[in-house]
Length: 333
Image (cartoon, rainbow, N blue to C red; front, side, top):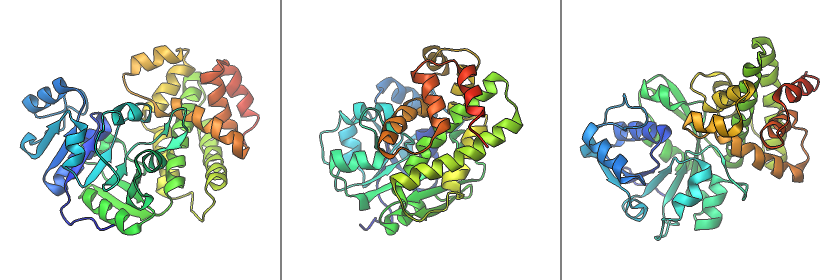
């Protein structure tokens, strides 16, 4: 599919990652259409010149943003749509859509699975909305919204079955602080993004329990091997798991102060219940939903996944984090 040199771009979502994406796209392309479901947030954004809830230090020229609380309007008015909402809420948001999506280029900036359906995001848009895989692009790579806000050098990978689409979408995001590359490994980067969140929760739990840097290094070394085993079983193509879309994203999510999944895990390790940790964070840790989905998908593949199993047992089987991680230490090498 050909993408116009200056396509009309729409953003769906109102959180920190959607805000960072808007910053990149407006800087490069001048204008965006932006769906937010809360009209009060839109009014406050227009009045303040920044998102009132997330990345408040990023100032926007609101004259370059066509805000709307109508998803239909944003879809109709856009050629390329970038979705940046938590995977757990995507079906609810899409329930507002009454116009076709299949003639659009759909870009997923969502690193998660659709709960219960256990679909990666590209698969969801293809199956539920008839979007051809060749019109779907996936954003991956080690990139936290907070560092985009500070214009710190970041790298993004854009994956699509059609590399022309991947390249065209990548150009929309390139700027002096964002470098891009392309890939055709749509399933691999999506599953890798789900798993790195699971492994970051594990890293956070271990930190909360008092394990040190030496053990964290062993944990992450084993995690990238676990990721490789799973993605190779689920989608067996040639890939280099050491690329930044896989290993790089795992490292930043497992170690960064900005990682909400690591933060969530650390709270669990310190004794918070899942519910209390979720309430205190005010943001969604995708790995909480992702570990359940991966656990269920792996019933088909039977891949050896001790770290994933440990996180699942802690979050869903209510096994003591101290006991479960102590058992995990005997599995790692």
